[in-house]
Length: 204
Image (tube, rainbow, N blue to C red):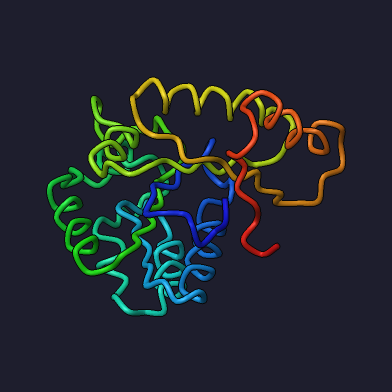
């Protein structure tokens, strides 16, 4: 799949720190460079807001950070944990209102989740539930490392079991591959999942 063919989508990861923001920034940059008026959306930030600032910059600052990130929890933990610490509740209708407004203004909206697929927002409501509300295809970012196959396949299984369309995955090399797992993960994933689902690095 060419990067410019990627539609509005929800970017999730196999965990925290796998490179979701880096990939989303690069994807937005590629889309906008090709003339597509794409913007990022980071509905929930926990801790440092640098991810939202990066998405605003990659969106060429056509909208302010506050529209890109409607809910900012200062505690660097899951949204559920952060809400308990701060005495807050995530306002889901407010998030959906902001998302709908962006959808009405821009042909592509790239939504970046928080952490992985089952990160809790409330006791009974998870990132996966929020993604379902957006009704977008899901793009998975995987950290290329030992253990990536298990994490990736379990996440993809959960996405499909939840009934959401799985767009594809990006195997993110945070550092150059050095061991046998890192060197072979790409080929193994393609062998198991089939061709056509791997999304190349936006910088290649």
